[in-house]
Image 1: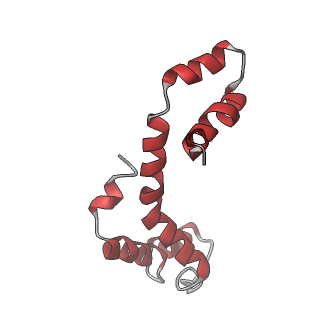
Image 2 (image 1 turned 135 degrees about the vertical axis):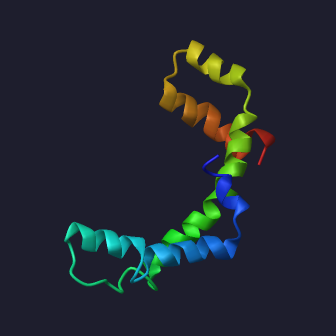
Length: 109
């Protein structure tokens, strides 16, 4: 649900929300002033590369997570159980079963 809910809100509203959070009168500056860490609001949180990366990551993560979830959900559980039965640990199961199947190596790419 945490991944799908942001898709229900428009792109502009999601971007504007981060502007409200990171702005000079935003939640982050207000919290820092309330904690006594700063005396006046800082302009450094907004309109920089870090703010842009945070905003774009928040906006586009659902578009990344949903296809990955769909691929991982379609991996046969029997293959994972067979890996466990053969004594391969979780890391080995991921490296030798889950990752190759999720990347499409089994299709002959």
